[in-house]
Each structure stands twice: as C-alpha cells, then as structure tokens.
Image (tube, rainbow, N blue to C red; front, top):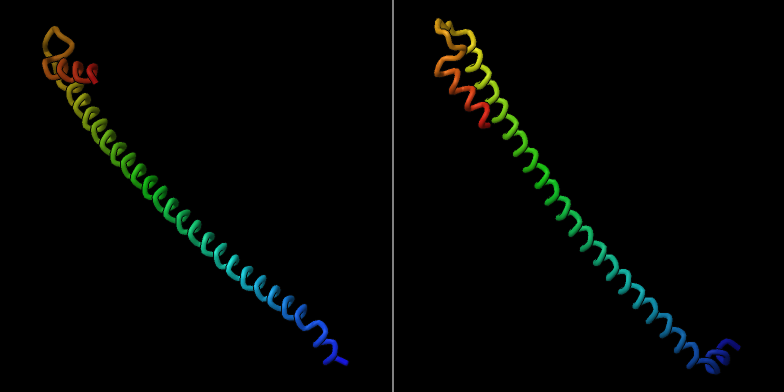
Length: 109
C-alpha cells in the first residue's frame, strides 16, 4: 500500500520537498543577510560612539586647560594688586604709576 501511494503522488511529494528545501535555504540566507546588516549597524554605532567620546574628552581637556590658565592669571593679578595696595605711598595721589597701570589693564580686560 505505501508503495502504491508513493507512485501515485511521487511528483507532488518531490515538488513539496523541493519547495520546502528552497524555503529553508532562502530563510537561512535571509537570516545571514539580516545578521550581517545588524553587525554592520553595530559597528557603525560603535565608531560613532568612539568619535563622540573623543570629542567630549577633547572638549573637557580644553575646558580644563582654559580654566587652569584663567585661574593662574587671576591669582597673578590678585597678587599684583595686593602688592600695590600694601605699598606705602607718600604722595598726594592714591595710586602710583604701577597701580595706575594695573588699573588700566584690568579695565581693558
């Protein structure tokens, strides 16, 4: 009986087997392509993230350098002002030439 069934539907069974096999092969290829696209997108995302981190680091480094430089200039300026303020002036003027120069420099900045 099974042999008669096979002979009778042989072409249909071969067609269905070929169809299922082709669907399986297509699905495998589709998954491989999707995985490749996913890996490519993740790689591009990682590159973009590294670039953003590098830019953030550079901006932070620039900010710290500027902050340090301004702090040093402020300390130096304050030290000069204190030195000029505590200097004895025996004239009728409130500021001597150095004090006036420091005052003019502070105004122009």
